Image (cartoon, one colour):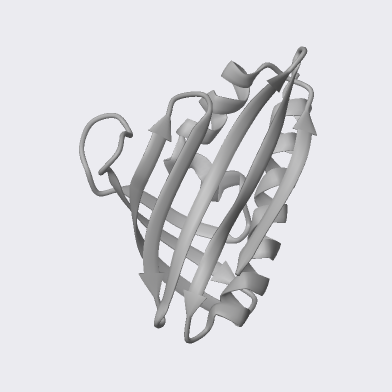
Length: 139
């Protein structure tokens, strides 16, 4: 089951990437993300692992996510598992003139896929709006 949310941000891709790349700061401006920790040392790349604690509806979920695809300033794809459900999350950045189209989404499968899809869609939309607000509000 797939879900995604896209938004145009009035900033170049480099500026949007700089915000997205500072994962540990997300909880400061993203209500549903409670904590993100880099488990792996060094810069993000394929194989890097992150511990993500998020509040989805009334449920707090902790995920160990592993990056499976990584192209700086363009795409990050990560995979994890929680509550019997497999989750793949993606973040893509596409330059469009002097703006950036950001698409955030994922795929879920397993026992609670229907619930994870609904929560994942809500979190994706929230992240997209929060990135836009953070970037455009700071210019």
